[in-house]
Image (cartoon, rainbow, N blue to C red; front, side, top):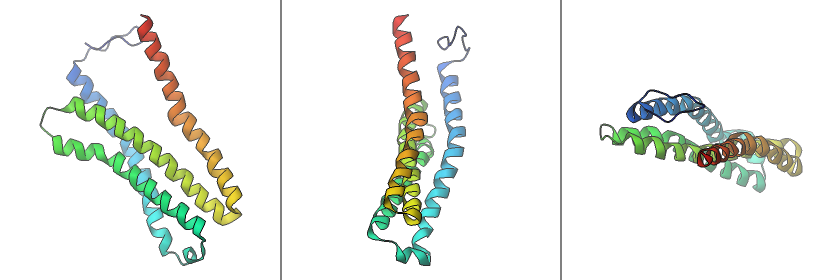
Length: 165
């Protein structure tokens, strides 16, 4: 039986809980991986556009760094599937669930950086470097707050609550 949450106890074994956690992560990754793949594919075709020949060295650098971030986001968000395949039927689900969770969080950070880099690239091309930097910086705020600060704050609160019991 798992520990109570908000006064309610879930009647599942540790293995059932790991199965549920893996299913939940798999469902979440279906959404994330699709977005990562679309962004990465978009970035891969950009240099083949005739207009790319007219971008400056700053834009080329931003493009390259953004492409690398998108590739790393893809690596991290696809890694849980690869690890699961390699470790399939080796009774190591706990390791898979916990290590995959950490890798996916890193992948989300790379995805946020790639999205901000894409905004920087496009805005710089349209309106100049100052507007690009401002846009990317402002766009980074919701990523930082909603994807990381709010969940980490909640995690600290839950940990504090558990210690106080």
